[in-house]
Image 1 (cartoon, rainbow, N blue to C red):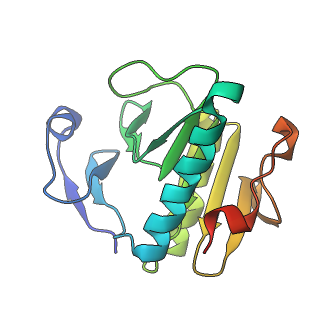
Image 2 (image 1 turned 90 degrees about the horizontal axis):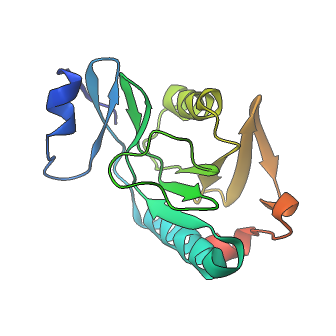
Image 3 (image 1 turned 180 degrees about the vertical axis):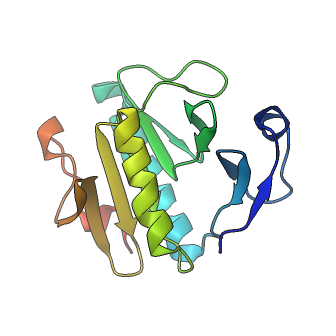
Length: 165
C-alpha cells in the first residue's frame, strides 16, 4: 500500500516516523509497503551475503538507507551496496554500486517499475529486483530481465538459494 502526504523537504528530513521510514517524491511523503517474513528474510540474507565479501571486495551493504537522488527525491532501497568505500555520514548523495528492491506482497507494479528507473538515471550501475514470493531475481536495465544469478562480472555469483529459503 502506498500512501502520500505533502510536506516541505526540510520537514521530511527531520521527521521521525513511528514505524517504517518514508520516501520523499517531489513534495510528497510516500509510505512504503509493509514487508512480510519472506521480504525480511531475503533482505537479511542479502546483507549477510555482502558482509561475507566485505573484506575481500571492499563492499559495504546497508539495509533501508535513505538516499538523496536529487533535491526533491529521496528513496530507500531495501539494500544499498557501496564499493570501494562506505558512504560518508548522513544521507548519501552519490550512487551506490548496487540498489536492491525486495518485493512485498502489496507492492504495485507502477512503483516497482518506477524506482529502478530512478536509480538507473541517477547512476546506479546495478539495480536488482528480488521477488522472494516467486523465488525470482531480475536485473533492471531497460526493463526487467529475469536472471539465474547476479554479479557474475565481479567473479562472484549470487544464486537464488543464497537468499531464498
